[in-house]
Every structure is written in structure tokens, then in C-alpha cells.
Image (cartoon, rainbow, N blue to C red; front, side, top):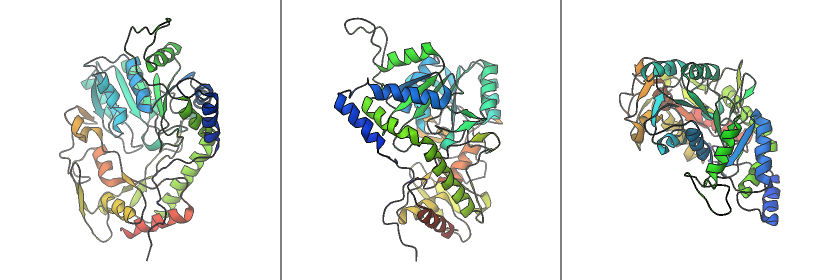
Length: 408
């Protein structure tokens, strides 16, 4: 009988190497503990070189970067902004900070990202939309050529939320460079972590300077505290930057180990009625931040979800995300559901939602997968995120695979 893991197998926890502590100690010993220091300068320089953007502004978190990106895009109260539907709400909330109007664009099965066909449909319905925010889900780029082309055609500013995709490439080009303004994250579970922190990336020097000013409470160049516009306490600390600085040399190693996990799952599940989160290997290379599973429609047992609970009926030869996640938890392993689409969230249910057919909405929050559900709702119903921690051993991953097989 399979035993539970003695030590928990995590979804994606920080992997530290030692250099992080060295740079943190330097911040301590030199007394540069706040929002100025060599660590910040170096992290901005290194990221600019790695990603291929001209300017990187180190901030307190990825959400702060997205907020400043929305401000730089000129979003004012009542302005429409098209957004990825399948994402974490940090992608969307900054639009609300500026009192804009998020309009959600359905997902495509090919990448699990914003569907270009639905985006084009959205511009026909809302031609005055000023900006588009696309998130690269779980480290996989969206169809960026098409998305960029549509934005250019309609004169909309593109903001790329690359919080999950640092190091991923599309046609050889790093994500985080496709938008006019872009955001990355160093949150605790990201592929590179600072425990917190994020960055705004841009090729526009005026935008970078404006973001730096806004992020330090919009202080003017005066001998006293002079303020002529609203600012924010968004600058990254030199201590957090020390952690990021120590992590960055290991980005490529982390990506390689994440990819090995993805490929081992793919091989291990080849005889199950499931598939992995997809990508087109002829034009993109994800960073494989999280490995995800999608259960075939005909292999789904009955599953119903409310806003806070889920139930299912176990059936031989079939399974569902709820059953698999509950089973993993029993064995002391962490998985999680796919991001619940934004148009299904209580705070955003009244916002417009655009599918390939025009305006659409899931029939109910407790739908059955594949029966009238939009693409994002269907992936949410049938998908889950697998343990993807790079400290997980091959033996532990093999055990995870066997546990999941047992659910069918």
C-alpha cells in the first residue's frame, strides 16, 4: 500500500542556493536596507540584459508593476481594457485601482491563453478600448504575434503580464518584451524568487523614469518633501533585491529542471485519458513553471463546484480534479485547481465577457464540463496544477504519477 510522503511535496516552493544570503548580508553590513542600494541596481541591470529590454524598474511586487503599467497606459475612470480571462486576479485588479472597466477575453485551447479570435471580436464590440492586458499562463506564452498585431491594428496599448513566464521565449524572444509595458514577479513560488518583489519592463525611458518617481511617493526634486501628483510606496527594498540577485544566476537551471518535471509527467501519463498544458514547440519555449493536467471530457466523473465547495461521484475508469487533488492531499502532496476564470469570479461576474461567438457567459458556476461551457470554464472544470517543485525527486514524482493513476 502506498504511504504518504514524510516531507510534503510542494506545488512550487522557493529553491535557495546560498548566494542570496551573501547579498542580503551585504545589504545589512553596508546598512543599505531600504529602497536604495547596489542589489537593486544590479538586479535591474541583470534583468534588462537577460530579458532584452532597455529599462527595468524594481518594485515591491508584480501587482505594483501592473498597476504602474495601467497608469502609464493612460487608463482613466470608465475606460475599457481587454484582459486575459484565465489568470490570477492580480492581472485584473490594477485596472480597477484606476477605475477602468475590465472586459474579459475567452481562452484558446492551444496555449490556455487569450484567444486572438475572441480578441478581434471584442474590438468589433468595443472599438474604443484603449489597452489589452495578456497574461502568459503558467509560464507558457500566448499567441503573441497575433495579439500584438491586433493591438497595433486597433491602436491599443499592450501590457504583458509575464509574472509567471520569466525566461520563456516566443520565436526566440523573451516574454516580458512584447508589450509597451510589461510586468514580472519574484513572488515566493515563482521560478525566481525574492520572497516578494516584481519589475516593470519597458523600452521607454520616460515611462521608466515616471514609474520610478511614482514608486517612491512621487517626490519632486526639491530640498523638502514636495508632491505634485499621487505616488505609491512601491519600490523594491535592497534586501529583497539581494535575494533576487542571488537567484538570477540559476534561472536557466530552474527552467531545465521544471522542463524535466513536465516531460516526466507527460511520459508517465501517456496511457491515461489526460493531456498536459499545451504549447507549440516550433515557436515557443515555456519556462514550465507549473505542470498541469487536463482530463479528457469522456474520462470526467461527475463533479459540481459552488463558490466555495466541490463534490464528485467516483466512477471506475474516470476521475476529476477534485478527486485527484483530494487524493494528493491525503498523501501529503500539494496540487491546486486551475485559475478560476475571471468572468466566473463574484466580483467580476457582471463585467463583459467575450468569446469567439461574441458576448458570452458560462451558464452557471456549477456547470458540467463540456456542456455549453466556454473554453476557460471548461479548462477550469477539467484541469489541475500538479506538484512542480524542483526539489521533488524523481522517485517522489514517480509516486505522484502512481497516485494519480490510481484515481482512474
